[in-house]
Amino acid sequence: MKNRIVLAYSGGLDTSVAIKWLIEKYDAEVIAFCADLGQEEDLSGVDQKALNTGAAKAYVEDVREEFAKDYIFPMLRANALYEGVYLLGTSIARPLIAKKQIDIAIKENANAVAHGSTGKGNDQVRFELTYYALKPDIKAICPWREWEFNSRQSLIDYAEKHGIPVKATKDKPYSTDRNVLHISYEGGILEDPWLEPTDDMYTMMVPPEKAPDKPRYIEIEYEGGDPVALDGKRMTPFELMKNLNGIAGENGIGRADLVENRFVGMKSRGVYETPAGTVLHAAHRAVESLTLDREVTHLRDSLIPKYAELVYYGFWFAPERVLLQTMIDEMQKNVSGTARLKLYKGNCLVVGRKSARSLYHQELATFEAEKIYNQKDAEGFIKLNALRLRVQKLLRG
Image (cartoon, rainbow, N blue to C red; front, side, top):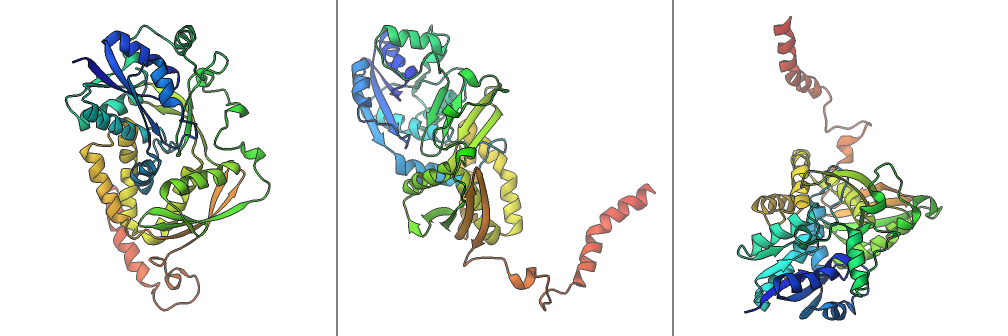
């Protein structure tokens, strides 16, 4: 039987070239798969483009709600930030795309899957770890590790030679990846970490200095750790993300510019826009501040770097990530309430929070007179906690 390869296809430069290359290199039928992750692109003709480029079959699947509900929201429940900054917008999309590829490979009796990630990046790892986790006997192909092209420019030249229409140009050759959670920019003119991105690079948000002069107040309601309503209107996970992207974006919120440590060992400069994710991270923390026990919060926070690392590296389907998620989801059961936020020229400020499950009691926290807390009790508490410090000093003289 002829080789069959399911290719993660975006219609962009790398994967468009990959269709022709895979056909020739492996004497294979290529089945293209494109996922609608809320990237705000017209995908109506992407299947035909794949077929015109040589694909034997093309799938275009709307996975927007699944992506938001089963991938973005679990990660937001964990407050995941890689290296304290990156909200993992590209990282979290890869396991879903790879899972869908494996589903199609099983359905179409394909013996291999492929992706357009480079041999220098993280995405190759994320795709292939998912492939092997879900179908251990699958063959994974990464054209960038095999083909003769050695730069994005050589791909552009090849595409032009073969009449493959692509968006990348010689004047603006940086790489982008977009979904409902974010858009990323890497490579090209961004490879000098000292250079500030130009204003034409803004996509999901406006530059903060061009945002409205009047602040925007919003309220986000949570149930069980997940946002369920925006300004009193209940929405599906994807709808909420989409609407909040518009509100946060027009107020200049969501830009991150960092030099990060890739899993493969090198440092890389990335610029990210994550409007809704930035606001939801702050709102979730606000509701948690009322509803989570102190020690539970501190324990979870100590695990955030590990959880974020697992997502960034590509271990979404690994047992340790699933275990951490189980613990996180258990502690999120009481994280219900509403956060009020003030959005203004790139700033996202929490200005109010309330919850029927609040552990905050004004009678205990007040500086005014009250009868619950006996301040004299603090003396013994302090002396017991100071005991080991006093002993240390006595021993040292």
